[in-house]
Length: 131
Image (cartoon, rainbow, N blue to C red; front, side):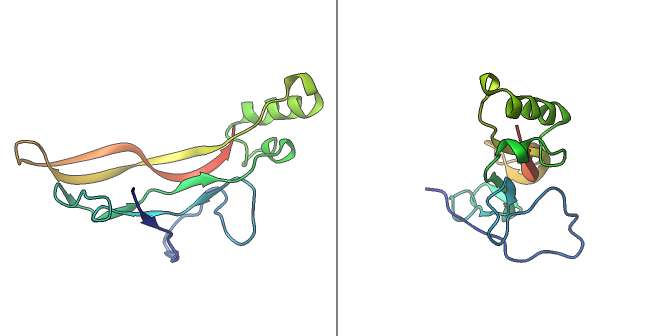
């Protein structure tokens, strides 16, 4: 099983986007999570980095929250959730999902032992919202 550890430090240069989980919040938020490649057995082929902050989304998306721009994944979601809140027939659960992601740069050995540098898209979750 893959293991990781929560990030406890916040860099001063880090730009805050969306809502980060903390305290007693149960609303959709971004949870920082660090993956150490040694802990999942990938240190033999990944040269750099030694791990990364993958992060993930967690929390509830009640209709009154999912309809708020900034928490909603899009303006479309905000409008849809307002309609769902006023119409029981349109009721469906909202989910807490990534709304902003960025790539992870990897330096690794390929199958022929060549050193390769690549950017893998959508590997780091920067912000979360409700669908």
